[in-house]
Image (cartoon, rainbow, N blue to C red; front, side):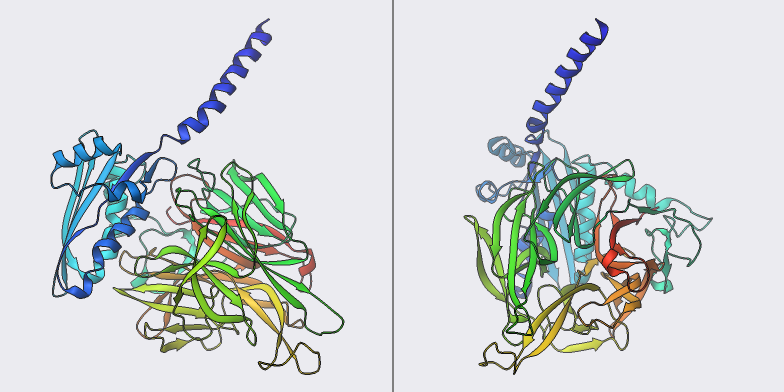
Length: 556
């Protein structure tokens, strides 16, 4: 009898949880960020909307506190007092409203941010700083608002002050112990926040580093995002046959769903960004199908890009077999992720034109053309913020790193070091324009696609770093199409005015590094450095590749 009653009660409880889950997911609080009021030179007149967009993106607490729709925000008059703010919130049904002002005098900026909640609680902060310090200051305030007003754990001002006043190893200037997986290269970039596994090379310690179980396929790309809107991140891996979704569960990757995609295809890149403005990211898959024919030496290539949804915990096509390469770039001045498209080229592998792209009525629509330096495409280019400007960073066809200024002039290039070789080799026919596809005049070339570069502020508050993988110990150069490296190191590079300078690096990683990502992989409220790794036995064992995911704590 007891067992029967217990089973009935348990079933009822499960039913309540299952039916309550969607309802709870729909009760996320909403905020509106108003355009900042501005006083200053005309050349900085874009600041108000740029700051609005930056805060609108940075304040989001996925599944719990999300930005209001543009249509709602546009109908709200910017409040001038706490009383007006509360009245606006009540009439609009929103939970928070954020306003601000900025005044520029010469090279100095006076900034003020005010936030009001529907329950009457307020938050405000004012400060004076140099123009090149605005971006890190805004990032600090967005975290403070999340902690102090949204009550997000680990984000409050008190938590930040507490972490900054901790004394480690008797040194008052080091707030948090550095992970020993990171080897610091320069005292100028001694970090207050990085994982102690990076300081010393060698040894078998794994403190600060997590390693997944082995997955029995080889992989090419990875993102870690909350793609179902439940407030917890999933791990999405693009593998040899399609895409798989996992969640971190008790130290293991738990499979949620797997979908096989186009067969006989090279899967190039996996990206994630919110395309339909519902505060849940969609997944963008880029692939290339090579069809070999006897009449030609080079294969016939077909571009296949897809947009997927994972909102219900299952993969679903939103766009299938789009005929251009799709990717994501974080374009200045706001550095928000933007969907971009690029066609296959005639002589070179990529067409020189890069365009912004949008999801509209189940199809992809292209928009404005994007400037690019030479050798750049949507998969080998990143924008590195530098003060109030930026640098283009490009991994060229030989996997050397090139840096360009905003006027597209080349500023530096690496000598011998190569970076971000993924092992994805795409064969194509390189021939003069106007000639046909015959085998007599063509020259067969291979484009080895690099994996993503990441820009972030990790070591210092006012300097962006570029995270890349340095290729080490090449395993096989006998095949032009396949360039596998048996080891690698994740390097954090900073622009020092002359070239890219090493700030810190990981210990040597055994295996072919295939992708990197910065995200909270275990949903503990802290971001980790996530590394997708292909392992294989011996120098020529790449046909037996398997996948492992590594995660390094940034805060210890």
